[in-house]
Amino acid sequence: MTVKSKFHLTAFQIIIIAFFSLIMTGALLLMLPISTRGASGASFADALFTSTSAVCVTGLVVRDTAVYWSVFGKCVILLLIQIGGMGIITVYIITAATFEKKIGLKQRAVMQESVSAAHIGGIVNYTYFIVRTVLIAEGLGALFLMPAFMGEFGFLKGLGYSVFHSVSAFCNAGFDLMGEKEQFSSMTSYSDVISVNVTLMALILVGGIGFGTLDDIKRNKLTIKKYSLQSKLVLTTTAVLLILPFIYFFFGEFAQFPLKQRILLSAFQTVTPRTAGFNTADLTKMSSAGVTVTILLMLIGGSTGSTAGGMKMTTVAVLTVSAFSIFMRRKDATAYNRRLAAETIHSAAAVFYMYLMLFAVSSLIISRLDGLPLLGCMFESASAIATVGLTLGLTTKLSMISRCIIMFLMFFGRVGGLTLIFAAVSKTNTANARLPLENVGVG
Image 1: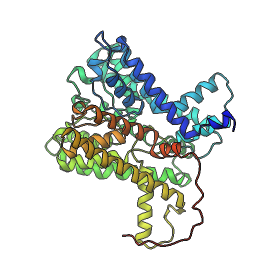
Image 2 (image 1 turned 45 degrees about the vertical axis):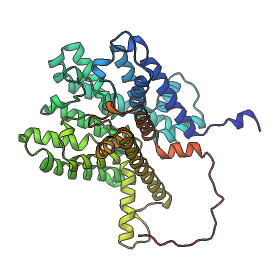
Image 3 (image 1 turned 120 degrees about the vertical axis):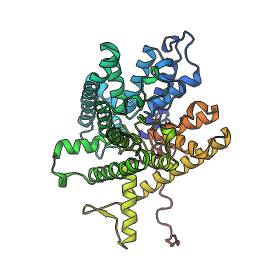
Image 4 (image 1 turned 90 degrees about the horizontal axis):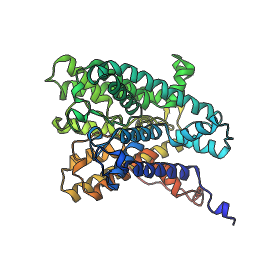
């Protein structure tokens, strides 16, 4: 066996190593004295947690971003968010193509896995499409945020705030710079400002809908029948997850507010759990039912191949279609006159199981270790594994062991459960392919 074959890395392993390397690099940069407002620099624990949260586009923090980090530190965090949101492999491919470096099949295969592209053909052009989409969306977002932020903070600071929050929103990161008003306050002071709410919600939705779906919309415009099955499922699930939670929040949680603010609060609280992490309402004042609904929305997350996390809308959609096919006693799971592959259903079930088990076990462990309410720990764990960033104020109260659990959940949620598993099990196991078949009763 040659040295080359012995240390051959799969696409999944390369993605894991790339994300881990970026997290460690970010942590080292954030430990520099120039990264904090004080002269001492951040501790390794605080820097590592912040870097993990930024690269995994989560938004959970142990130090308020606005008041603790210097301008340099904030720029590092913003860069980590941008690279983490677009994907490290995407940045590499674009850099290589820009400098006319040859991009081989290996790099293309890694890129395909990184962005969940359907085909390896045209992957470089698809990568350029991703970058163009990111830059245009973030540029427009910053432009629409400027009037509100410049009016309050002045030209230069308002410009910086507009760019930072536009990038953070599109990448579904949830980092904010509003701590100078009140620490860990997020966007609560803008709960009745239409321009800020609408812009942030639009960025979150576009970033979380998936580049594959955006490419479908670009190519086929309003001819929906030409969309891929994945795009149709994503758009349908998005509509359902926008309408039903809005009705609940409007009538159940924010009924006491004036109509304008009530609509904005309900809409924002419907959108932000899709792994964005901003909040315009005081989440600690929500009822247990409201917290539970938010947890469910966080776990579902955004779309495959997007900047969002969670178990993904397509996972939930595939399992829902599969369940209805069983209820209707159909042989195949079908949607929009298309049949779902058994492998797709199996993968969706595996992802659902992994997320649910890790979420439940982590919540129980953190609650037991730190003596915190279980519902609050469930909220924190869901926020971490779905890379959301919403919190009920428990992040800063967690012990070091609990913080390590949260960091693992963030990493798991960003790189993907199947990526981690496939990285550990690099070869396909076919030993059990043709064993005798036997039925097992379920349900």
